[in-house]
Length: 407
Image (cartoon, rainbow, N blue to C red; front, side, top):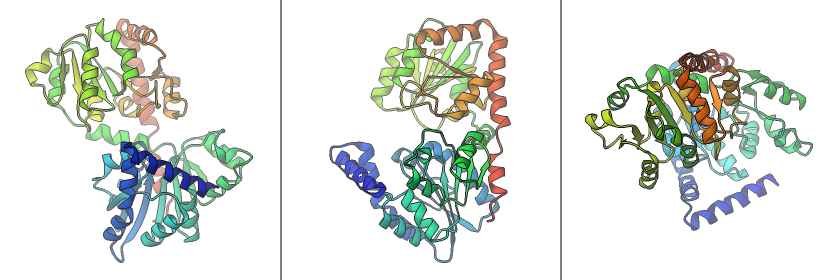
């Protein structure tokens, strides 16, 4: 039934591609090249480690471990595969991987062909990746296989009465490095005890980002002066409906917006919502940004460094698909706002508990919390300190994982 479902899914993706769905088209076209890239890239006699991630967020979780392995065990080459086009397109030039391609769809034949071509010495699946045919094939070929930064919840199929077949996939892992005690306990209840609680490797990634964050002269010119700075990262339209009214009526703040999408229509839409002088990062001069009220980041790759210039951050997605990476902002020791769709993100729950994260539900709710920060700088400072401390205290997952694996 599982494999039948995979074939049905492949058919639906192909159908969507025929009707012009861009993401579906990239998924199909990209996978046509997977085996060719593997065949061309494999060096005879080399030892390969396979890392598989779903998209960009999971890639960020896998990076700390890949980069540590490259530094400490340079004899290994790394093959990095993606499921999603958004992750692949963003990371296809990643310097620490020797081969980067899409993971073929999880059919029995694809799994056998891929694993037997690559002959990996080890395989690492990040967070939610549990592709059953690939896992069964890795087990059959006796390839040590690990799940890293994984997290489990009561409602998942593994823990349902009918989830026996899916539980077999979990038993293919030699070890599971999970984020929390709840995950360990759930796995224990179904007889899986080769589990270690290590936390989330994303904390190590954002800690590294803090070390290597870039200075951005144009942003520095924009934030210069006495005004406080609010940064909206990975912003969507529904997010702007929540935070924009406050800034259009409160000129004590400067606003930086980094949209989740940066096409011309999206930038035009954001600009139309701003009541004040608005400039674009790629087109503004130093003189223009100094007098502007809002700076729109109309390119990718800068957001993780831009958060360093903020007093408060807002991370988008919480009124739609789910929040984006709130740790990238929290690591700089600033409080982070986000919308209500965050229940599946442990870091959101923990940030709320420690006071460094603020869940908001409406424009009025947002305005009320912002007024508190405006009127009480001690409260603002305490929330920021809590956010920064939360990140620093939870770093170290990569050390725990790498110390227990025999390379």
